[in-house]
Structure formats: structure tokens, C-alpha cells
Length: 494
Image 1 (spheres, one colour):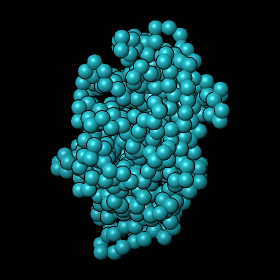
Image 2 (tube, one colour; image 1 turned 180 degrees about the vertical axis):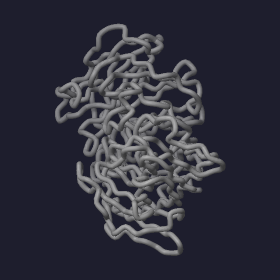
Image 3 (tube, one colour; image 1 turned 30 degrees about the vertical axis):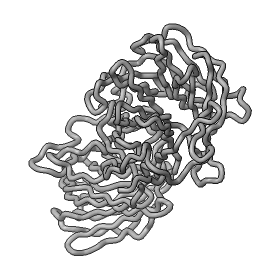
Image 4 (cartoon, helix red, strand yellow; image 1 turned 135 degrees about the vertical axis):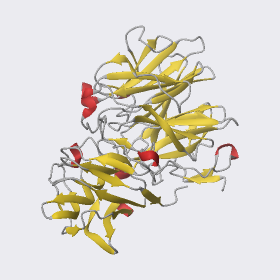
């Protein structure tokens, strides 16, 4: 393995990353919105090569509210910190407020989320423990929920972050910064007698990264832009984490919005010039660099393929809402058996989609499917965002049909993307999905030695603040869908 890397280090939707280090290990958390389980956690030894180690949220709260898909809601940008021997995640739900969960081991069990700052529109929290043990928390505002944004508000908190110790204080007013708009996503640090806030401005797709410093915790803060697109092809480079390494280097992990691919992850070197951080190559993103501290590359990556050992999906999978008992059916051996759940005429409203982020820029995924059940039972693979397409099997009065359908406009009903064909009732069908440049998605199937192509290409679209999802599903009045495996091949990313 080479000791160099190429950006993006993660070409999939790991939105709003935050990273901390414990010893020689790095841990990353990302926002998850309506996906369940939420708050995915990744581990690395070099800041470049990452693997999934679990989730901090097993279910979204309030439980009943998230029994149906709520695109764009749920877990927004979290922060991850190490304090007093524990890991802490502060995360927002823009409709309910700011929650805290903790764990001794990030790959282990996390405490039930505790609502510590209730309120609508509070987003993107980050705690800070000062040298004297005092605790603080800063957050942004969502205009879609409270009517305003571009401001950062801070609270003095109890040391265990269980409650605020006073009213919020406006510590940064983005309207007072020339050219600033949509200031959000603050990350709070302490260094050499200064309080530092790293915060993005300008919006998800076209923004930039501010750094701000003050001698006093509640400001005033002096801002500078430390990273922007410049003459690179990396749009909107911002919102992430400043990470010191064991060797004393500084790095910045951030995202780039790539539409249906989601918010993909980049790593930038960070240096200090005249007391200020400069990110990338003089404030412009780099495409390639040596690894941090010269550490060797490690042949790991977030899992995509799955053989579903003992009938259970791996940590790369998530539901589109809080799952109900019985969605996964116990059966002997490996492979996944999904129960057909009533509803799902429009897969965008189906809570029982089991999906994972679309990996780019090129992807080929396949799974072998068998479907049981009566009329209207169906199962297959979908690529879903604001629009969607799927390929799979459907039970009809005339038998089992191999079908490919598309809903290529928001609110539009499905239509056939190719003429369905009848297959033997108990046939195992190999389904495949191929994604190429521009997230152009093709579907095909093989059965009985025959290959069936779905001739109408589909251009994937993002979902509610997330990229497109590739998902397995089973819907209908009864029956189940058996998936023997899910095998994914992606282009080399690093």
C-alpha cells in the first residue's frame, strides 16, 4: 500500500463528519437524518482508510413520530468529543431540539439519547469543556424551522451536559460578517489561550469554511475564511473536523456535496500561519497528499457487500424509519429473508426499505432473489431519492413477473420501464444495478440462463438532505423475499 491518498477518501454519503482521536485511533460520526439505526460510527488508524463499527442510535426518538419515513428530518449534524474518559455525541433534531448520548467504547452500547435543549430550529450543536471544568455548548439555527439562521448561540452547561445553566447568548452574528450567509455547523476548540470556532458558511453545495477566534468563550469572535473552492473542482468544501495526530500534525476532514452521491468525505492538511489555520493548499482543496504522519495505508473500507450471516444484515444497512418486529424473518442459515409488508405502492413512503448509501462514482451491485406470497407481493432492489426505479419480482394473477419500474418525477406514480416478463414461480433471479458517470443507473436480471435488460436508463436523484439510497425491499399482503447475498463492486477511490 502506498503512503499517499487521493480525495475523496470516502465516496459515499457520510454527511457532516466530525472526528476525534484517542491515542492512535480516530473515530468519525456522521449525520443520518431519517435512516435507522442512526449516527453511524467509523474507525481509522490513519484518517484515510475507514471501517464501520456501529451506530450510536438504535432507533429515532420520539419513537412514534419516526414510525414512518420523514425525509429531511431526524438526525442533523452531530459532534463527537472525548471527555472524562467517555465519548460524547451531541446531535440535533431540528423539530425537537438537541440530544446527548455517551459511551465508554464507541463500538459498544451508547446511552439512551437525552433531550437537553428542547426547541424547534436548534441545529448543529458542539460542546466545549474548558480548562477549569466549565462546560459550554454552541449551536446554529435552521431557518426552515424557526424563521431565521446565520447565527451561532451558546450556553453555559452542566458538566455532564444534562441541562443549560442560563439563557443562550448570541456569540456570532453572521449578518455582521461581510458576505456571510447560512452560517452553521460550528465546531468548538481551545488552543494556546484562544477559543476557536470552525463553522461553514454559504450553504451545502457552494459554501466555504470559516475559522473564528476569541480570547473569551462568549466572544467577540474574529472570522477568516480558511478553505474555499478556489480554482479547484471541489465545490462547497466545508463543515467538518480539525484533528491533531499523534505526530503533532493538524488535519481537516470535511464534505463535498455531490448530489445523488451525497456528501462525500475529503481530508486536507492544515498548517498554522501567523496564528491562524490554513487548510489545504493555501486555502484550496488538495486532490492528493501523503498520509498523516506518513502512516501506511490500510486495506479497509466501509462495508458494502453482505452475505447476511445468520440471516442478519451488517452495519452498513439502515431502514427508512423505525423498524417493526418481524420485518426480518428468522430462517435457517445465511441470506436475508424480508417479510412482505403491506403498503409500499410508492417506495418513497415505505418504512421497510433496507438500504445503504450509493457508492460512487461507479458501482455494480447484484443480489439473487426468490419471492413467495400471493397476488401483489413484490420484492427487489431500488435506487431511491426524490425519484426512484426498481427491479424485481411481482406476484400477479398470471404468475410471477420480472418487472422494472420507474417513478421519475416527484409525486408521480410508477410506470413500467420495460415490458414485464413471466418467470417460473419458484425461480431464483439474479438482479443487478449499475451506476455510471452522472449517476446514470441501469437495471438487468438473469434467470434460467437468459439475460433481461431494462432498456430505459434512470438518473438517480438525492433524497431529503441525503444522497440516493440503494435498497432491498419486500411489500405486499403476505409472503417474503429471500436475498441470498448482496455483492457490490465500486471503482477504486483511494
